[in-house]
Image (cartoon, rainbow, N blue to C red; front, top):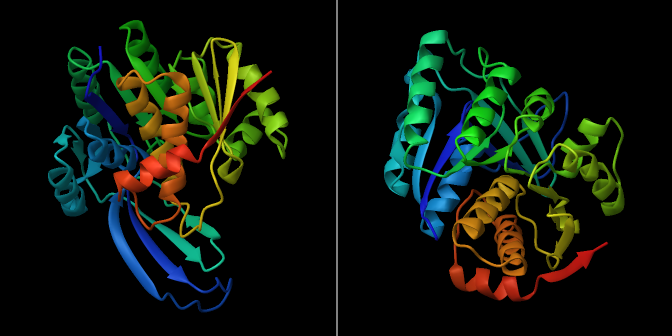
Amino acid sequence: MTTKKVVTITLNPALDLTGSLDSLNVGTVSLVKQGSLHAAGKGVNVARVLSDLGAEVTVTGFLGRDNQELFCQLFEQIGAKDEFVRVNGGTRINVKLVEKSGEVSDINFPGVPVDQVAIEQFEENLFRLAETHDYFVMAGSLPKGVSPELCASWIQRLHEKGKKVLFDSSRDALVAGLDANPWLIKPNDEELSDFVGKELTTPEACQEAAMQLADKGIENIVVSMGSDGVMWLNQGKWLRSQPPKMQVVSTVGAGDTLVAGLCWGHMQEMDKPQLLSFATALSALAVSQVGVGVPSFDELETLQKEILFKELN
């Protein structure tokens, strides 16, 4: 049965200050040609794309009281139900510098600290939502006060309730979460390299590394490899999709867009080839624009027909 209801969890949201410039001059002055400040964080980005696709989205996590206006405006704009727990202080600002070459430098600040009272309120919200929702997207890094083990315990509890948790994180949070039975993970080649402790430079090396994760019983392992496309392991079978060459404007949010596409495809019970080509096309389209969202369904449909698709051994 298809569903439209989904919860996105952003434990450590951010206001993204994005600047476009010719090139970054490290150690001296760099002139930004244009800039924007908008509500973001991986789960928030996923929510935005899912809303564009037609989902009924509930957003939760922790949000600083001092600078919540842009988040409130966004949630209203996309029609998302706001279940964020407010904490004292301001949500962090992350800086993304996009060079003419397409190179992106991320300067990520630590999040607003979270205390035990906020954690208990979040848990109460989360498990109340679990009574009426089956799909949960938990994406991004952890704020001070939320340990990787605590985050993993939430994934495990949702799993035990039969919920489908799409988990997209990195470093210690990813390592802990991998043992908590997430239903789908989407490491990129860099995150996978971190996990196995060596640089993975080919799709074959990524495939081999991902097989180590399959031993943990994770149902869907999706590896995103930028312009090399996407690989998906499910029920012992690998599928790979390859997008056409895109005019890259910014890669910011492309991974989050892929997660949203995978989530929506499963929610709509698309068959595997259709689902992977849809999510890949959505993500490829994302690099041709600034910001996240679905600008044109016609473009998406056209691009989906150009996705190359094959089964791997």
